[in-house]
Amino acid sequence: MSDPGSFSCSSMCVTKHLNLELHADFQGRVLRGKAALTVEALQDRLVVLTLDTNDLKVTSVLANGQSAAFSLGPKHRFKGSSLNITLPFHLSRGQHVIVEVTYETSPSATALQWLTPEQTAGKKHPYLFSQCQAIHCRSMVPCQDSPSIKHTYYAKVSVPKDLVVVMSAVRDGQEEDPQDNSRIIYRFRQPVPMPSYLIAIGVGALESREIGPRSRVWSEKEFVDKAAFEFSDTEKMLKTAEDLAGPYVWGQYDILVLPPSFPYGGMENPCLTFATPTLLAGDKSLSNVIAHEISHSWTGNLVTNKTWEHFWLNEGHTVYLERMIGRCMEGEQFRQFKAIGGWKDLQDSVNTFGANNPLTNLVPNLQDVDPDDAFSSVPYEKGFALLYHLEELMGGPEVFMGFVKSYIQLFAYGSATTEDWKNYLFTYFKDKVDILNKVDWNAWMFTPGMPPVKPQYDTTMADACIALSQRWIRANDQDLSGFKESDVKTLSSHQLIEFLSLLLQEEALPLSHVKKMQEVYNLNAIKNSEIRFRWLRLCVRSRWEEMVPEALKMATEQGRMKFTRPLFREIHNFEKYRDEAIRTFVVHRAAMHSVTSGLVSKDLKVDVISSPL
Image 1 (cartoon, rainbow, N blue to C red):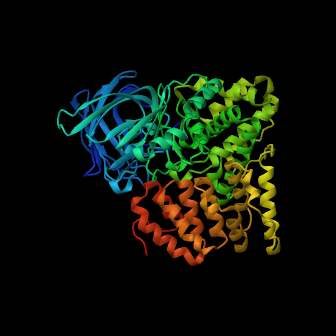
Image 2: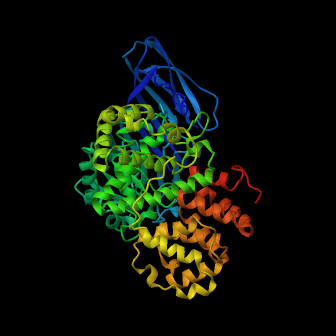
Image 3: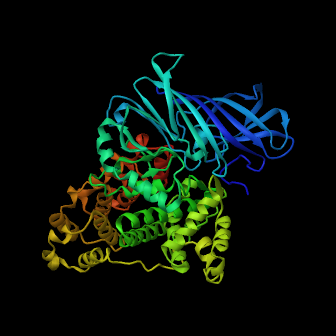
């Protein structure tokens, strides 16, 4: 099967290893250097190799040291351009060639965000970080940019002496740059084969703290101690995951806390999870994101979706594993409670896309669709709901976890499609095929909207949240005096998030209600980003004008898409502040990650190139 997101053809040849030599130029905002790919021919008389690129300036190509002719194909809307290399010789099936591409990235490479010193916490040094998922690696490295192709890599990166480099690989020493004694070269090796979207780099004035026998947390010094406290349960989570899914094969598990513009909660780069500083709640209450990224070490990194159409294999299984870790550490009721919240997130995504939108299919067709446009909680939560439904049918969490572990072992170091997964499910549960045949697979996989079955989750931890939210929904202005600070005193931050999420599923509350809620609960004082985000949406939706600047502030002082996009959409829906939302976005757009600014542009219907305001 071919990958609709890539120009390269995995049936003709596959990359086995990548050797990267990069020089980071902060002045020019480019990486320049060489990528040497060891490629194996899968057919006889192979003479043309096709790689993915996006805005790369290629200056030369060598094949086994000989000069090779090359040309760039026309530029595609989101796929970039194919790099077509004509080898000076034929390859037979099974033979290898080392193709060395000398190139430079563009200052606007979609994988790279270059930050000025002012955009960092320390304000003294510049910063660079990458985000290659789904198909952005090609703007940083010429490669076969498909998750179906996995390879090892080595890297050498030269940076100014006062900066530190970290990568999605094991650190392998450093030395002064022989070409320039004001620079230092950092070396890395990744001996476990992995897809291109997991190549990652971070460069900044970084410090680290040890948080476990195989883990360090990296960050600017302003965040590093806070992060070390927040993620101190990392080793416990890793051990729990190993008990569930088998040995952790990546050696090191470090965490890099990025500057606020990082667009995701976390990114599961092997050996080095990238994390948003919005997780630093001060009470470890948001560290379940780390449990999610740890789980990806098995589902996603070790077993990978073959194309982005099967993204649910990565994310649905990872949410399932993450919640199993939660179950081991906090109990079954906690897992059930998190599943209830996940169902609401799914409902939210389906409402945003529209219930008939094919991008709400568990397995969408991404022919000529940018995978970034398809990104939502659907693969995560519809995927989890299917796995949980199967768990109930097959005999409970222990039984089904046996299947998940076996699936990971079977497809480890490779990639899979939904069909591969389903065939193995039927093989593993061969004595329960009659039950599996009753599942409406078409409705689950290929039908838009909510799943055909709503699991009945245990509501023990949610009952207090449901009761309190119902009191607010039903209250008239006379009843408001009955609300007291004590209503929320016994609620955990997870329950407070759930309480606000329930209110966001209803019609907007009257303005008098949200003002009273602030008066009795003082929600403005809470720093937990998940609570603050929902509270601000609630205020804007109830047309509390004084809270609009607060919502715009949160939408722009961090760039996590989960928060930034809904906040901007909420303000944009408030007719009186629509222009203000657009104006604020236009002012802050340049400081945002390109994925974030591109998607917010679409949300607000702002022309990406120029704006009327």
